[in-house]
Image (cartoon, rainbow over all chains, first blue to last red; front, side, top):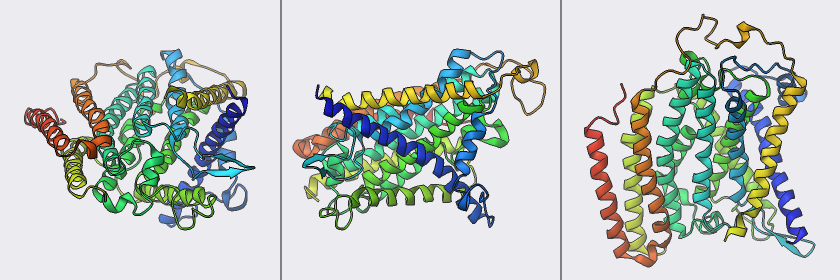
Amino acid sequence: MDPALLVEWLVKSGVIIFLILTGFAYLTLFERRVLARIQVRIGPNRAGPLGLLQPLADGIKLLFKEEVIPDKADKVIFILAPVLTVIPAFVLLAVIPLGPEISILGRSYSLSLAGDVNVGVLYLLAVASISVYGIVLAGWSSNNKYALLGGLRSAAQMISYELVLGLAFIGPILLANSMSLKDIIQAQSRVWFIVLQPIGFLLFLVASIAEVNRAPFDMPEAEQELTAGYHVEYSGMKFALFFMAEYGKMIVVSFITASLFLGGYLGPFVDKLPLLGPIYLLVKVTLILFFMIWVRATWPRIRYDRLMALGWKVLLPIGLLNIIITAILVILVGGY
Amino acid sequence: MPEDFLPIAVLIILATGLSFTILLLGQIFGPRRPNPRKGSPYESGMRPYGKGQRRVPIHYYLIAVLFILFDVEIIFILPWAVVLRDLGIFGLIEMGLFVAILLIGFVYAWKKGALEWD
């Protein structure tokens, strides 16, 4: 094997992990500041200028906290569950192109770890569902009935909305004729898929917010009734891992939404200046993240039976209908 | 192409290493002073009653089974979506029939109350 290739992979993996870690740290701050502004407060602004060192302070605090393991907990599973939850959040980003190919010193590099994988979308679906295991195992191994209920609710909710997510994935695939995210982004060079797939985009948005357990679909961690849901018994760095998984998945989901529907790294002048690509992508991702926080600040949590009814009785039929209409149009119009 | 997935293996190894490092750091720096109160299940300060791992409502199982049915369907639609333009009208009608058969089952499950939550 070419050692240069291995170095390239290591560097790209490092960049992805760095992206998720810093993204996670500053997303927590961003969320707190935005929520505070919406609620006419100021938010954390003491640690460093504009509160920019707040994530660091939080991390150090969690590092020096005692890690309590309940006496009757299944210790091995209890310790492994947060790891199992956090790994998919890191690994998902591998197939998403962060920009067009750039050439440095005469060699051209693609700005994704494995963007050429021809089943990119399938990979996203498969890896995203792994984190359900971590959550269920965390709830089960804690030996706490609220944690168990939170884990079960989470599992039922995530698998229900995963169907909707899968159906929303199919629209862009139909239009791009490919499951590779690189091809899907390239197919949007003339018009973004949000224009051609408005219903698919809305479905995807709703399903992805439910998939990452964000308000108004944060039933698994409904503080008022389940104390904190599946991670009620976790403390210290294990709690930080769950937190990292949740925010990491938020970031990744925003990347996926941007790539599938908002043209990914495409934008004006990207052909001439490839380095603009990642900047456009980050701007789009930030806007989607802001939207998620905005939704959290605005909407009350919906009741669990209504949540499941919405997923199965409303979104699933709409998703199927959307695919059939899209397929008919693709056949009738041919190319778009 | 399996070798396309090698870089992902590198990323998985790095991510796993990082997660365990974070766990280890917490073990090293955190204090460890267990006592029976701390070790009991957290129930907002109330004395815990009943078992921690209790029986699970059958409904979750039903949802899981329905999920498997529809997830397989979606996995089946994915490759179809890639080659639809080559299949043409034939592919459209075939998939229409497939979805229609599944919809009958879906309507049956709905009418039977499998999707009701009480």
